[in-house]
Structure formats: C-alpha cells, structure tokens
Image (cartoon, rainbow, N blue to C red; front, side):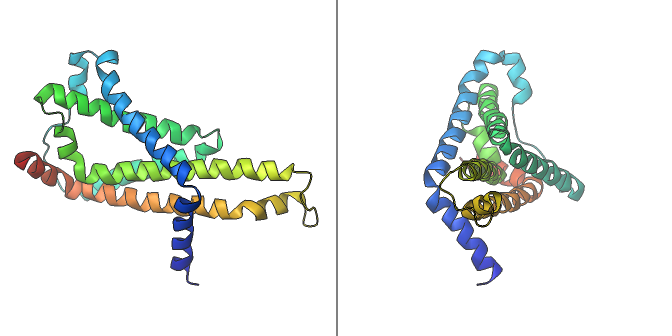
Length: 214
C-alpha cells in the first residue's frame, strides 16, 4: 500500500471511528461562534466594537504578507496541537479565541453596517478554510490527548500481557489512534496554508464581489 493510500486510510478511519468526538468538536466550534456573537454587546461598548469591524479592504498581493499570514496561522496550529497534551488546553483555547473572535467581529461589522451577514460575505473564501483548519486541528489535538489517556490506562491494566513490556505493549495497542491524530493534524496544516494563500491573493476581491451582489 502506498504512502498516500495509507494516509487516506488513517484520515478516513479517524472520522469513522471517532465520529462522536468530531461531532463534539464541531458543536463546540459552533458554540464558540454563537457565544462570541452574543457576548460582544455584553463585554464591549459600541465604540470598542468598532475596532473589531471588518469592512472592504484592498489587497496588495504581497508574497511577504502571505508568508507572514501562513507562518502565524500554522504556528498557532502547531502550538495548539502540542498543548493538547495538557488536558486539551490548546484546542479549547484556540477555538474559543479564534472562532469566538469571528462571532464578535460578525456582530461588530453588523453594528457598523447593519448587515448581519457582511462579515461572512467578506471573509467567506479564506474564512471557510481557516475555520475548517482550526476545527480539524482541534480534532487532531483531542485525538492526541485521547491516545495519551488510553495508553496510560492500558499501561496500568493488570490484564495486559507483559511479554513485550508494559510501555511498548500499551503503545502498540493504541498507536493507530496516534497515527490518526497525526494524519488529521497534517490535513489541517495543509488547509491552513491554502487559507493563507487565499486570504492574500483571492479572498478580499472575492469577498467584495460577493458583498456587492448579495
């Protein structure tokens, strides 16, 4: 079996075998967005919300800006994934901050322009890929933490066979979950790179066009 076939199998099996965990991740992302939208008026004054508004912008088609966007976003992905070992702190914080901020910015833009969908129109292209990457990366982080928990649990399982050693045996039992986590992490990483390219070169004119016709 080729590398890509094996990789695809791990990605596919991650969603099939851990569909409920992925569903929880999706629901948490939706909760963060809705929460950000509705608490915007509570934690900020209208004047403060103006700082969050997102209106039509002009892109400079800058390669350096694109690389900076990609580096920052991918760095956050890596940091969030690694910090998932600390009781899933990284994924929870990442979605709460970034997806919640999208909800806040949506409300701020609505207050500024009166259109509740303007922010979504302006950022629909790269925003979709960026949020998707964040959700997938968080899912990968949850899988990584789940792998650690299961490995520790199996290590202390008194019925476990000890022929290969406890640590090696517990890792062997759960390594499939680790590979699934890494496969989803790589997928999220690639999607985040695509989001950076779209944000710098395509998203703003595309978003302006969508906002003009809808």
